[in-house]
Every structure is written in structure tokens, then in C-alpha cells.
Image 1: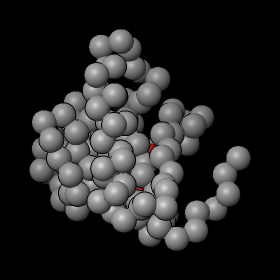
Image 2 (image 1 turned 30 degrees about the vertical axis):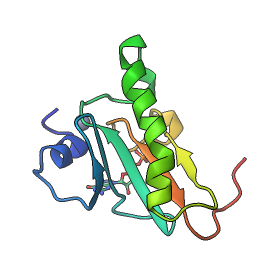
Image 3 (image 1 turned 60 degrees about the horizontal axis):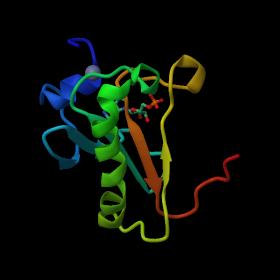
Length: 112
Ligand code: 5GP
Ligand code: ZN
């Protein structure tokens, strides 16, 4: 997706503060952090949102979720953390390349 900002980060065409990377997944700091720690985890392949997932993405999504504990620990978030996936315009999604927000450190506002 040539006009996708996160694909451009994957391709190294625009800079990002990268925290973790493997063959399928990239994690970088959110440019506009809403918490002391605010990371974005994305699949390197372009997937628009959670709404586009099917069975073929099960291993990838499993890998992403199971990476979270180590990632959070590496950021000093032993006390806990919050993950958010905004999906579609109605879910508040602004960048249409699937991403999981990882937030933590200090007090997070109550949610729900
Ligand atoms: P969404 O609202 O789609 O769930 O979240 C998109 C997130 O991407 C926002 O928190 C926003 O700050 C972040 N973001 C948007 N553009 C960039 C960028 O170019 N670089 C980085 N690192 N984060 C971005
Ligand atoms: Zn993309």
C-alpha cells in the first residue's frame, strides 16, 4: 500500500523509533504518546483493520498477542498495561493499517 504511513515505516521510507522487530511484526513508539509508554505493534503485511481478519491471520495475530508480555516487561510495565485496537471509523481508527496500542506507566484513565 504505497499511501499507507505504517507501510512506509515498515519500508524504512519514513523514520520511526523502533523498539522491536522480527520477520512479521514491527513495534515502534507512537509519535503522539497518550501515556508514559505508548507503543504501536503492527504486522509488516498491510492489513486494514481487525475487521479484515480471517482464519489465515490466526498465527500472525497469535504471535502478536503472545509478544505483548515480553514487550511490556522490556518497557518496565510489570504493574500492568493496556492494549487497544481501534477498528474502523466507528471505532476511532485513524491509521488504516492494523495496529495494537500498548499503553502503560503511571496512571491510566479509567476505561469502561
Ligand atoms: P488509531 O487512532 O488509528 O488507533 O491510532 C493511530 C496512532 O498512530 C495514533 O496514536 C497516532 O499518534 C499514531 N501515528 C500516526 N502517524 C504516525 C507516524 O507517522 N509515526 C508514528 N510513530 N505514529 C503515528
Ligand atoms: Zn499499511
